[in-house]
Image 1 (cartoon, helix red, strand yellow):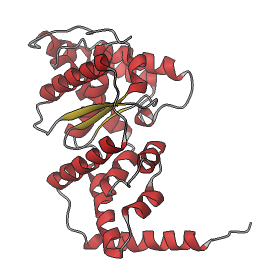
Image 2 (tube, one colour):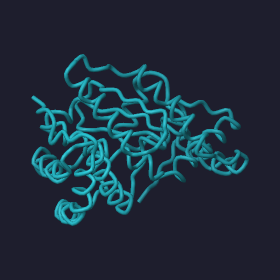
Image 3 (cartoon, rainbow, N blue to C red):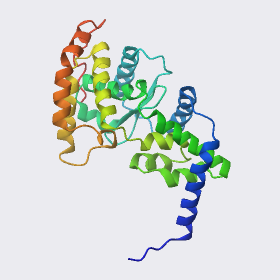
Image 4 (tube, rainbow, N blue to C red):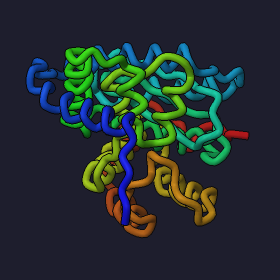
Length: 270
């Protein structure tokens, strides 16, 4: 078998190796550094994406995100936007910067299911899942700067997921943390913990935690055997997830019973 290496490939591999070696020169990255960088990347995403003009959906996303944020007990600089994107996705960056894509809204069916999704994503941020990888992404960009590599070069070499590539092509390249975040794949332990804390957050926020179980049933039906979206790709199997969420229901129901306000499943999403 013959292996052919082109000059651009050799250059990119060399740059990568040099960047890894130079990453040791970058300073240690703290929570504050990660949150500050996330805020910068979030501003880029907002500037390069199209906001939804669906007033009803936007209002729902805003109120649910605010309630989940309060229920988490974390004092981040919370913010959320509804973006026009067909992908069934939602995410929460470190420091509380969130986005919901319009593609997921019809699948959710209810405001309560939206609370389950946002609870799950917020839990990834509050539990600091992937902190080491995000810090490493920032260090790699710092090393890239030492080598004189632009963010565009880094983005073209390191974006592995479709979401990352799409955002990079919107105009202007994401920074080191942006690339690390949109490439991030949480492990199953992280995902299970996000399910658990997310279910508690939604219950504290006043949404029926039973919707957390129905959510995954709807997502499974919507995918119809197709590959799941990025944010679900490393999740436990549907059967295991449902069994675990059912086992956690007594605790979530106790939280729901003590919620200051109870909204049930909330409004229906048309």
